[in-house]
Length: 161
Image (tube, one colour):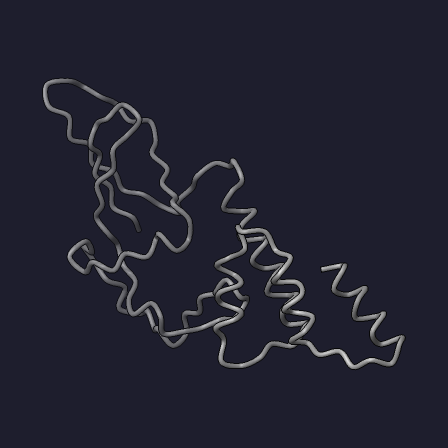
């Protein structure tokens, strides 16, 4: 990024014209392979980005990647838990579930036990990897019944609220 900005300043100083597309292409070419999803989104957009918008989107992607790769505690807002263990008594102290934001999206309607009637897709926005926001992607919101396997190999059922 700094190299592209340095080139942009040099071009401007020498009187050459610089385009945002050229600067974006230079940065994309220098990104490591882990940025391939970001590069794909940027190059497939219908509208050409301004360099400043591109920098914001790149920083947003880097921040999201960093958060996804950090060793931090997994967390959920609220979980109802039913344990099914036959023949033995097994006390569960707590169960925290978090797979990352996008994997919380459950698209199998049969997994839902209750829907939030007040949810309005028009008012629910999701931020994409390129920093843009979109609405009406999630069509509903509710409590989902899922099965999980704990570290001991026992099947646990939970309701994600």
